[in-house]
Length: 218
Image 1 (cartoon, rainbow, N blue to C red):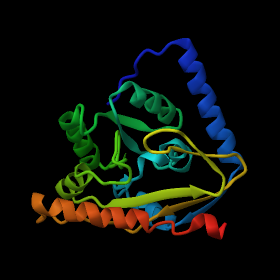
Image 2 (cartoon, rainbow, N blue to C red):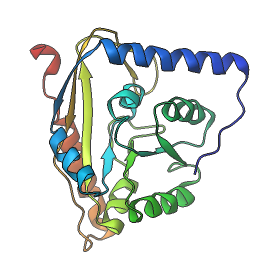
Image 3 (cartoon, rainbow, N blue to C red):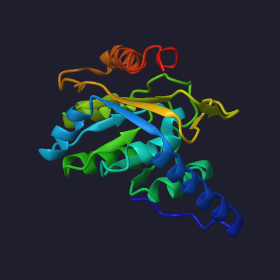
Image 4 (tube, rainbow, N blue to C red):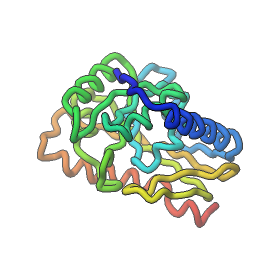
């Protein structure tokens, strides 16, 4: 699985502070859950699944998904190592690679995880975008294993957004948060490569329909 890169003490200190701030936000936020019973049922039956999350939701997924025993696909870049260090602090395992770097090796490791009954998490618009556009890797993985994709998103009524390609979302302490799981999305074994684009569009629609107008309702 993942190997840790050696980081200097200054960066380690920053990452330690980030993990503490995530913890503080998690224990002070008011979190509501929708659709979690689907995941709980699959975990109870030891059925693996593929969590599909947008890249800009990674930061607080560390808290919201920490009890699901997930293996996350993380870029093998230096930025990916920072994410790896934070996620590991909340119990996540990692497979390192992406569509642009180490992709074949990462896909083989993810296949092995799912076939061994381990659930995985993928951000199909990462690591470089385009934002909220599903790339085909997650579709291929679901087809080859028969394991369902579970669309997942969260939203908070008070968040900062970083000046990054994905406008990465950082919820503020004491905020209201809604964490939403969609219904299982299966890719049939009979799907051909020419069908993948259509399944990508379907998954994008499922993701974007999870949290309509949350900020206006909160």
